[in-house]
Image (cartoon, rainbow, N blue to C red):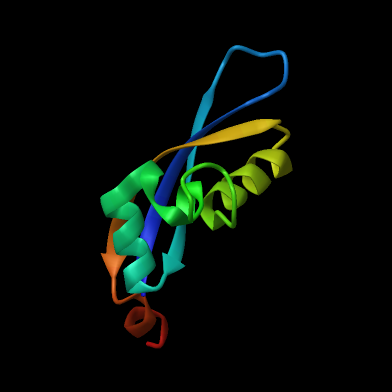
Length: 92
């Protein structure tokens, strides 16, 4: 497992101001590496067909986060691996 920091921007309906936010999530190594390498083109961000169809778990996570904080929309900005082997650290 690797910890991935996901950074995104969110805004409220009718506003022109975007607010940057981020959160850290543990992902399996292959998922974290794919997202860090491919960024917004990763199938985990944009969906398996890169045209908005199919599951896109990271886009869905940031949208849920935005809605919970009173925003209407959110867009992915970038992601970076911030720590590795989080499974070993958590078991201690």
